[in-house]
Image 1 (cartoon, helix red, strand yellow):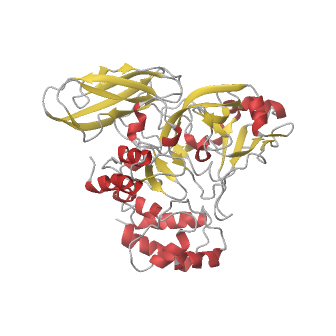
Image 2 (cartoon, helix red, strand yellow):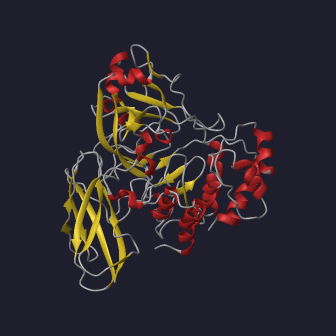
Image 3 (cartoon, helix red, strand yellow):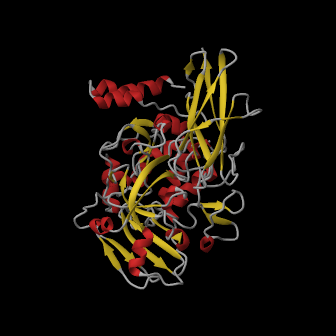
Length: 93
Length: 406
């Protein structure tokens, strides 16, 4: 919940969830709060679980870059590194 | 095969839903996901019902990506409430039809017009049965895996669509002879305005075909919200990416659309797939937008992992293609060494699912594998090996199921 509040404050974007959306609990590890804060505004976090564990480090880097460059996610360089590290550690091959 | 977890998931609706119809429906649907999917996709997919829908296989909540369980493909028409749901962007407004208008124009048109839903209904209506198939259907089966929505077999459906011909809308504004593409936008949008809006174009030659519709009915009902209310593009034979929902604007243009969703998204390598329909204004030296659906088939009976009584066994399923029509479906029960023609079911038109059936007499009890292979009327058939491509499109490897004869 804290992550959602941070996101609202940071991005001032509307959060629209489908009525029956249930929270997706990702693995509790370093970087999780950054992932939740930056990623869950635009899409539910099941996208991460669904796309695992096959991505290698280069593929997770490419996915994070795609979210920023192609989809315009407002993620700082520092956060992007934390997110990529979290994904590689917890959802990579 | 149903794992314990899957049984628990399927049973949850029963426990929570009491004795109502919904709970029985939930229990009837299965989440028999293939082992080839990414482990994470298998572990996070659940049966979940969106508003107005039966429980479908939830791959992502937001944007909602839900696929249809295989049992709904035993018939050529997929019910609206079991039809797969696919969105790219998370803001999906409920369109107010009293204020909704579809704007038609663009720099490639001679004029402009706006259509209310009643205006669309006053145009001559057309009806056809057509498959709406996500370009990435079966992406989850790719080896090696590619990122994206990790669909299994159910990102597709076949419905009877009714609407106006796009050609009639375009005739109202008049096309310049230089109009090369027609561009579509819908009411859905992204959470941040930095995300490219979902906009798609099609070649003008395809737009003015008699079978290209602006549909307002699906299987005899007004288009359900999650299927594009109040009106969507129906582009029979071409993959679902073009079938824009919640249409708000249609523009004729004299230069190719350059948006993200046309390039680099939804591209296939040139020359790898046996396709006829080309989208030349968008082709590059190395790739092309995905266009028509490749010929394909799916075995719905028996299901993978099922126990089936010894005796004559009904093998059934559906076949489809990009609109040339299915000519044969063959079944093999010896690993592809020999093939026998199945019986085709009712022909609902060249763009529709075509059911097939075959009666197998197994020689012995134990594990039995059957495969199905469709061929269309221009001689295209399914591949035995995957044509791998970066975005995971056009998976039409021959489907096989293995069951136990008891």
